[in-house]
Image (tube, rainbow, N blue to C red; front, side):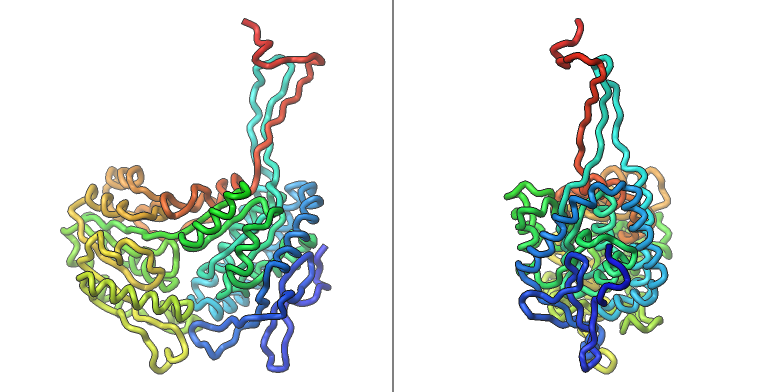
Length: 511
């Protein structure tokens, strides 16, 4: 069992910089490569958050070997007992919530209110999945033969590989690790290289809760050096990725070659519909939160707002006025409303899309510029950006930007709005603002998306419902709720014949 006597995951160098090691088979170990990489604060790159291992295939192999050996023991632990450890980890996260939120703001940039919510989501996932340890229901059905019992039970898949993104570095890691562990699997997780510390903090809660060695392993590094070998490893029987659609195609192809289970949660271009009868105050606040929360760096971000023409001008005027007033800055400042982009590359992508929108003929109403003076000098900051009069076929209305760039599109009515909303390759989240219950239910039926909100923005998922989307957003699997149990378990049908004679099922059926 891992205990508090384990060596710390981080050591201090002579410059007081924290150096973090991989966690493999219950021990904190250096990468076999001897190489490391830096984790810096995107709001102030002078702030070195920590140094992490730049791992390679040999480190993945060691982690998989540890997980494979641990699986033979862990799968035999009763599910309620496994769940108790997850519950204990959630309790530890409560105690450390503020510390871990501040760590996350430093490494990822989003404001403290949001990082506290990120940690809370991991806590919520802990409580939910701990409860599932006493459930995991399977069907018991009547047999077609006399004196025969029939049922189906859930069994763990085996060793699971997990590749997580940087925008929700603890919440999404918890979506993957917690149900997998409760279901009896063992895990190797590769966090995004921009935000490894938050995943480390989650794993540390596991170790302090007493998780047996080898059940949870963490290997840091870059995609081609760690993620690809993890997906390719023959002893990894399931791979879960949250990331871009391009990376999803690569991982999905790798997994298909060896018939691994593969869960892909990918991109989004999420529409928020505002009809003439909407509560505009509510819609504007929702559109600002959905569009600029996490600096627009959510797969569920409200990147398109489709507004009926009767309220279009009023909505635009008020929305733009509010967007201009949003306070951009370091997320550690409690008054900041929007933080930086995660890194220079993402910031440049955001700025490139501003130029694309201009060239396409969309009208730029506010923002569009990098902020690089004064307090912004050492960070990756950008103004909240709003385009209006956007055509549905423009690239800024079709492609995922993953930044604080919102497109506002006019529509004639509900049918036109739904046609525009569905006219992209993605289908993750959607929302509609209306006071008409008939229109709301029509939108629920007709919007091609895995999630639909009524009178709320496109963000705000809860851990006890399935999370995922349609079309290029993924491959049909879901995270959260019962969707996670479906992915991390396999069905086994069981027949118990107590007739004390050979029964040949359909062959012996009496006419």
